[in-house]
Length: 382
Image: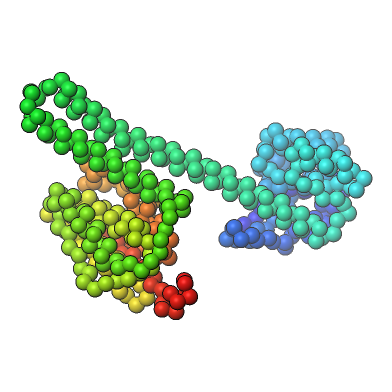
């Protein structure tokens, strides 16, 4: 249970103690949060005392009487607006001062509650302002995370695109200056290296597009019965040229059709990312084994490799966006750090479970368990 600080500013001891009693065991819950919210009630008898408390540790919510000895409630409100605008203020006012309360809401107070009030009236008002506080907090968090993701995106983009672009530019200038003579044969190595750089950049761009489509949910998704064995075979054939270049053998153990209700593009993206990672982070003369098999009410996709492996403490980081595990053996491997995060997003969309087993220097196994709807569920359209 989360407890948030609520400051009561009122010169009447009865009002302060009454609010504390009403909120002492009061909790609220909302569908957009996982835990209940309780209140840590803090009390101040004057505006000056309230400002001192706010300076030390700003509360989430302030219940503020306007008529106070010394500085008035609107002065405290002005201080909050100028210094801690994230604090939400609800005015406590008498019926005779409703005009003043309305004015206070116009200059920054969230709402007002007239006194005398019943316990239920106070609870309803506090619940409403708490909901607004939590929604604003979530919005700020999403905004911060969005900035962080954009920063990570730009960092990865600049790092991953700058070097290959510089290399391609350098090769083109060498060809422009005819530094290898007049024959095209003298430039084949430059062309091959340039094409490799372009391929790497294209991979990064496609990963970003896949992630954007999945996150925004704007890509049309067609759910139908598809055979994962056929999808796996297509992915193996697609990755075979890269495997041959890296001297890695790919095998597929999936003779029987394994049908699931899914979008074929989603499953192809999932297989391509798992197999390409297994090939890229492998060793010369290594192997990649793919299996598609039925286990009770699941179809299991299993991709094993004889690659460099992953430390146990790094496994939990694998599926974060823009994350690449530091390993001296993978220093020369290009990648966006998005492939496994895309795999995770797709798996989550289908209620699938991912398991990773890995031993440094010996290889890794990624297993994805996709639920298979029963006949009754299919008939019901689930």
